Amino acid sequence: MILESLALEHTSKIVLLVLDGLGDLPHAGNGDRTPLEAAKTPNLDALANVSALGRLTPVAPGITPGSGPGHLGLFGYDPLTHLVGRGVLEALGAGIDLQPGDVAARANFCTLDAKGVVTDRRAGRIPSETCARLVAKLAAELGTFEDVNVMLQAGKGHRFVVVLRGPGLGGAVSDSDPHKGGHAVPAAHALESGSARDEKSARVVNAFVRRATEVLKAESPANGLLLRGLSERPSFAGYRERFKLRAAAIAAYPMYRGVASLAGMSLHVPAGEGAAEAFAVVEREWQAHDYLFVHVKGTDMAGEDGDFTAKVAVIESVDAALPRLMALRPDVLCITGDHSTPVSMKGHSWHPVPVLVRSDLCFRDGHSRFHEKACRAGSLGDLASKDLIAVLLAHAGRLDKYGA
Image 1 (tube, rainbow, N blue to C red):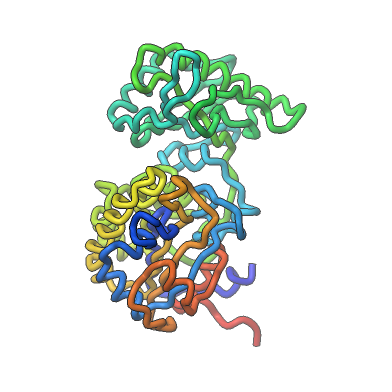
Image 2: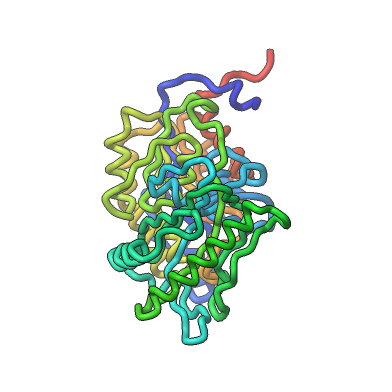
């Protein structure tokens, strides 16, 4: 609570630009460079020269974070003590008004073979329009199990949200998802032995999955579904209460708006998924907010696809749009990621994430590039992600002196 007690009202503006999964490893097939090193980034490089650089550890050394914990850390919430299920994040980000006792899950359409084994966890990344059609089909045929209503809402691509609403439900339920291809969809079960609430939720989930698979059996490639992150909504103190900040979140994907919602941020959806569309919303919301979180998803998607060229292209597109953001002259600009998603690993990793902080009060490291190697030698050093908010507030003149 020390940080909150020092927070000051101020007119300064803070922008946190998160390139999801930004961090990477040297890639042998590309001259032992990371995507950040290989990308042509004149604007980021100019910023690096007048900024403080460093590295962030999202959770703890060696711990690979999910997107929820990764963003909670960036927002100043310790991800080891502020536990949030993925389903809650998806539901809140989708604008669903979760009520006490609701249980939410993040869902994927997937492809199953004749034996019920998952062959593609993302159903070929079906378009959002197909997802919406399939969700409508499920909603028309599946509504109530026991005394529990099942509510569905389509998301982007292969993703959608499932909310269970009814008496006596608990959120401590395992995933109905094998988490990798080549395995059958497992049955959900209560994570706490003897919990009637969790056992009821698991029973409803399994009945829903069985019936939904029957409804989808003639579809291709999305003839199955996976549920994970079943959870109930927690209660956190928000940014206005904690840091005296009027905060906004600009993100195309619901999950990231969901994390921001827990922090009390207002939610805004850009017209597209690129940085230019997101920066247009920043312009629109500039006067009404002190803190603006901007999310770009493409870097993470390219990393998970193992596509080095695509990750470079996303980074370059952000760099090309950056002058539009810089024209607003934020008092503090921070550019980083929520975790690393190395192309060679095709998934999240535990590796430190590069971070850049630019303000009139920062130490200017004088590096010519913004990438992993430069950040390793930066003046910010190695920080826990949960401590980043203190650095940003201090650079914005929003923290009082501690003690006499």
